[in-house]
Amino acid sequence: MPSNDTADVFITGRQVDAVGDYVLTYTPFDDLNFDDCRWQDIVSATVAGDIDLYTGFDPDEDCYRGKVGIGIAGNKIAKLESHKFTSRDSVRVSIYGFTDIDAPLNDLTGYDDIYQGVYGLIRGNQAGYGTTTFGVHGETHAGKYPVGVYGEAYEDVSTTHSFGVRGEVTNRAQSMNQNMAVYAEVKPDPNTLTIGSNDYAFYGVGNSLFTGTPILISDESVKTDISTLDNASETLNLLNPVSYLLQSPENRSLGFETDMQYGLIAQEVQEILPELVHQTIVPEQIDSTGVIEGSSVELLGIQYSQLIPLLVAGFKEQNAEMAAQIEENNELEDQVASLTEQLQSQEEQIAEMQNQMNSMMESFQSTQSKMSNCCGNAPVEKGRSETGAIELEQNFPNPFDVETTINFTIHEPAQIRLEISDASGRVLDVLVNTQLSEGRYTERWNASAYAPGAYYYSLYADTELLTKKMIKR
Image 1: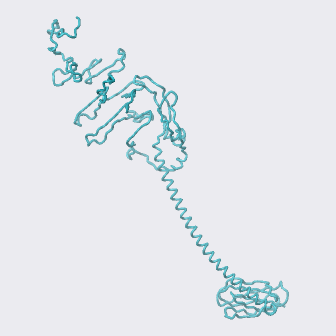
Image 2 (image 1 turned 120 degrees about the horizontal axis):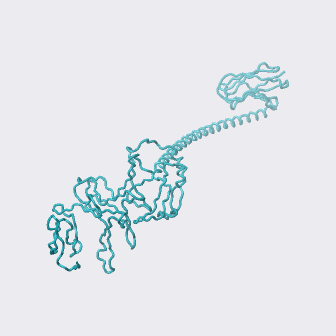
Image 3 (image 1 turned 90 degrees about the vertical axis):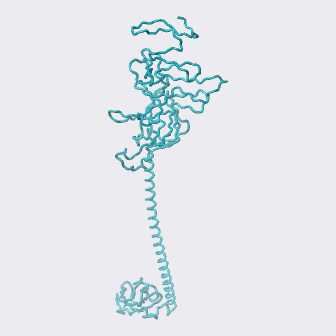
């Protein structure tokens, strides 16, 4: 039948009875009623005058479809479910949302609005309606590079910000304990309950920007075999910080920072702290159509956050060493001060002894001068001092042949000198030259080396002098 989109009568075939007889009739368009609950026509909510179709709309009406499948047979599990079969479908996308915001240059209306290709919304005000709700949920179980959700933003024109994926949480209910704009989790192997060394909850190529503080789980309840770090300073001294520029490996752009960088070389750290270095795999770059650009790259990475405890331990060790050094220096300073006091005391003692020696020398020189000027250089015999402080007895025997005894008495401590001289005043022997306390003393003189004749023995006590004559046969 020829079509005419201006006709006011719609011709269709209608079932008359259960046998399946059909008649050809006409029905005004406004009187259409699809009793088999197929598509319903409604006034468009977006463009006035258009007629839209919908199905499965009101659960309270008899004509409620519940779930609708597109390209699917059997039971449906969603309100709208689309299946794609590669064996017969040339299109690789099950559902594609597209919004075209291009407009003539003279028509700028709506340019400040928000346009969305796909928008998923779950709304409710009761927290008990299910444990978890997802606005959009993506899941992939096959493929060389399974991607649950793929977000891509192209900056074809001058834009302020571009987001491949954007997450936002608004805490309208202040009773919520924790809010996460983006939540990513790597599930452990159900058999071993472990996470692989190359499994990452987040992977990014390029710089990362945070306006808050990243928090790492460090609760004591999840730690075991806790031990104190020792010799951290020694370990840190083995590390070699360097400056460097980054370059992408061949056939794979990684979006490295172009400015000067500061850090460590992973291969060098691996020899010192192998537990901080991990082998990572940078995957191939894949666009939204599945086209692979570049190749995967195996690179070494460092857990720089693990160096913080080492730095703290090293800092504490250095502080302890400095405190010990300061204490040792204080002890040395105390020892130096004590030695200085001892030296000063010894210097004073030496000065006092020097003064005494000078006084004795002056007295001796005075006595020698008196002896030289008296009686033709012959000493004046005298057995008792004027003050009575010293007494010098006559030697015995006298005259003597080889050896004689000399006795003297001092009544108060004094510097004593007992010497032997000839008739000309020349000193031959010194029998005593020391500090003596009060008392009577005896000295013997052996004159075997000297010729017979007259000799003198003199007793000096501080500034006093006593002299006696003796004869050798």
